[in-house]
Image (cartoon, rainbow, N blue to C red; front, side, top):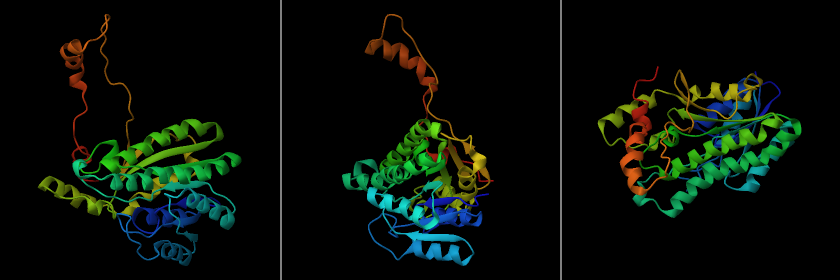
Length: 301
């Protein structure tokens, strides 16, 4: 399905990223396996996961090369794309998967923790996407697949930095889809529900959360890869600007922000009339303060 295409997958040394890289290679794609090989909080270097993953793909008959640049560095992102061009002669698919987490309740969150997470997720997705876009436009095709999170599109506690970055990716992806559609370039988001290093950090503070985490443990990262492969293929030529969630054998098309109810007052509004009339009319349509675990409350199927 992907014969002749070249994909750059960031954060591909382990977990979901590695599963994606292996799957794309198995479908015929050349793969640049990027991974900085750091701890989940991004503070410590740990081995060389990109080289190991690329070696495994090559040993299985695929075509892969390792890259160890940081997505948070714009020049590093340019080197990743150039490596794809130098090694495989082109680039067709960018999978923005690299990420770190530093989960804390908002009142304990430091500027450093906020900045570090946003730099990797949001800036990283921009850096790699921007580095590839001129090549995509020149060839008149290309597919961006960005990893967002249900923590962002629905909500979660203790992840203000992560949610801000991941929801920023959704907005960026939509703008990219609009800006680049004349060049036949697509941009979509996936909110994956699977067991990975990042979901290992989710605390179980009550029985309901513990049950939810046990459900996630049953969902391997390989369950995410087929949707990525489809979105990177020519079969997805008319799919752009969308947000998908995937959980085991379920694929969800997620809603995007649109007006849900309106209220009008011909003589204008005051704070008092908003309180007495406006909010009273709108309150029934308020979005509840629920979390992704509460929304996806049934067992994966």
